[in-house]
Length: 378
Image 1 (cartoon, rainbow, N blue to C red):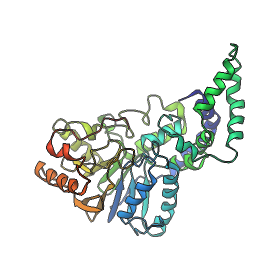
Image 2: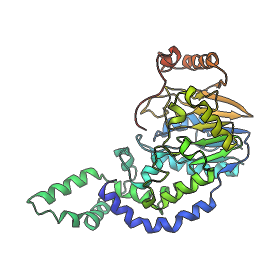
Image 3: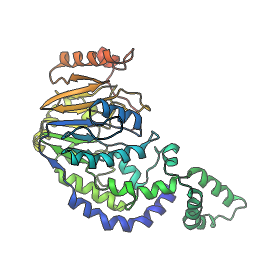
Image 4: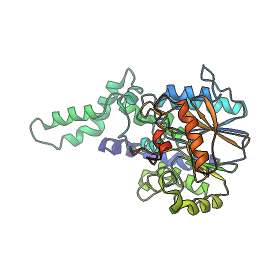
């Protein structure tokens, strides 16, 4: 977190503390079984591909209005960063929340590590285009006023000739127009900060658990409510982040073990975890696959971060659960998700690969020459 971000956060923290626990009291995180669920993984600011996928899944129409009736849409986090249209993605989901409720459906937006990072000020993946989306006609005046109030006094301590001018120039280069408005918008009273602070990290719908990263052995005895309350508490008071849950690599926003650990070594651990939560499946994003919704552990774990955004070049694909039937919607075609052995998985991957532009990115998985996961930091 930059010194400027820390200064701004200190000026906002009183407001955070006043509203954080109110959100915890209002949140519901366990829901009855739904007839139809559409689950979408990481979006990373790609509004166009996200809306195209939602149209393919029958969730929205060409005007981006809800047409899915009682469907429950689950987005497992990482709406933000890397792409240019994070703000448009959030605005859409905020509208769909109201429209879906009127139709008897529901939208569940879960927290990913990138939502948390934007709230607590780790902005390493925010693009210039994202900041630009927050620019206003007054942005230059807003930035100048913020600089004079929060930064200039620190520069005055530097007495070397020309140093103050250089530091000012450097600070302006690192804080493009829209940066101040972006930080305010993700603060406790900002449009997006207030909205995100109401969101869950983990939800349970019937016998399915949904979250961004995964449940690690470290937190396997925690309840859904305990995890959600702790994450909200920390995002309401950034002093609690150190040694907390929200920024823990083993926490529900960051853990990759369900996607990366060898199945033979962790199958018993996964089964025990599902039994403790009284679910049959856990659906996660966060760790990108080679380009398909991917079942692991006999479909006890389902990975849905397919690299949707143009930044990753993955397919428009998501998970659809309808009347207990699990299917991948892959480039507009529904494919039954295998729960059997390697032969069933291979047949599924070949069917998905046949829908891809050739050569399919799934070929390494099919040939068995790759583990099927990208190594880029998410």
